[in-house]
Length: 63
Image (cartoon, rainbow, N blue to C red; front, side, top):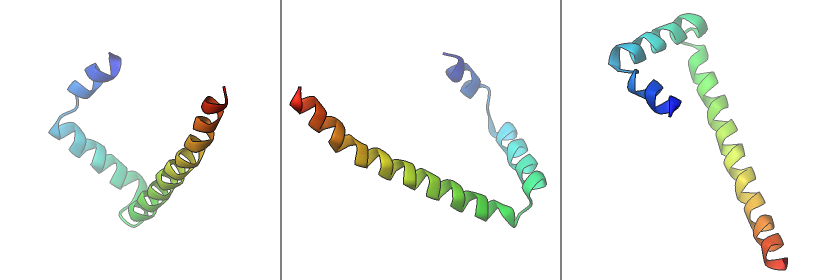
C-alpha cells in the first residue's frame, strides 16, 4: 500500500529532478559504467534464479 502511495506522488518534474541530481553526483561519464554494472547484475540474478528453479521442482516431485 505504501509503495502505491509513493508511486502516485512521482511525476514528470520529480523524475527530472532525480535525473539532474544523479548527473551532478556521478557525472555524465560514470553513468554508462553504472548502468552496465546494474545490467550485468540483473542478468546474473536472472541466470541464478533460472538455475535454481529446476532443482526446486525436482525436490517437490520427490516428496
